[in-house]
Image 1: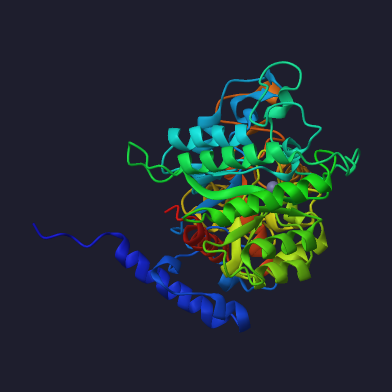
Image 2: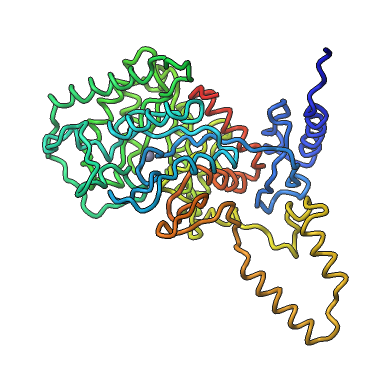
Length: 472
Ligand SMILES: [Zn+2]
């Protein structure tokens, strides 16, 4: 039997032409950034909102399917099982969360391990969803009080019921400088040895080959680092100790793992400790690393990229105009995408939100309208042309009706229904609980800020992530 050429081949060639035509209308670095290899020979389904680009660069081709890897999702958080602050509020909808992610093209999820419990829970998830869910393992700066001599519970202990059950949740993303813990509480050096030994065992066990021959579940060491925005969880002194001790462990692992790093308002200490462990140019960092949820300055960004590190971007990276100026400076070959759910959703108050706003249909037909063909849009157009209002009153009424309808249209369309947790329903997202399917918004905003296509952003982030974490 003679094998037939796959149906996608002519389409791929067509897309190659589209890309080449786009390059011809682009100028400068944007054009240089576009690659025309087979992976890139597709076109975006969503136009970017960048006003500096011509429509030719924005015209979508229907057959590019974006692909995303959410590199930072706290999927082991009980909130994805319907538990909020220790109380069950709705059915476990973890599978729905993963399904929605898959529907937007987010087919790989790297679940953040930020404590012993969350790292173990993340590992269980990875084993339950092999090839989709991967994990990291480490102690987040906000979970680092276990290194303090004033910490009284066992470092691997977790509470799951009643008072203190919020401990099982990951720390929220936003800064909270309300009650910083002062330095001077002391470091428990004896316990540190036990913690590091236990963490080493956890990491090594997570790397053992699975009996089912599934892909390796653990793909990075971390999350760990420094967070001086949230000293109420853990003092600076203890955070520095925790980061240094874990860096020493990470550097000693054979083979090394890529690093999943967290740095907030702590840049110089962060870089100094990294260089102490891996050399002034991080030359001993064999597998690289990502500084996730980046919200630092342009100078900090440049220093991190100069050290060969990757930058993870989520909704928190778009809060202000300054944040967005920093995002504009990220080299595509250093970019990774994440949601950091259940935190860090993009909100209307964020400066970057404007890149999600669709243009009104009157001024610029949306791609959906153009592509509908014989669908609803054409019917609507035919309807309005055939049924012209007969008099001024009717015209006014229709005008009011149109305005009313326009008001009802959300500026930023929701792909999935969103409900409050009290009104939970199957298939809907929960208001205020960010989840991996929103990674497409992160990509769209990055594309808008940088003035490149969503496709370029998606493909660059995918390639970077696969290269560092080996998740393909
Ligand atoms: Zn983090």
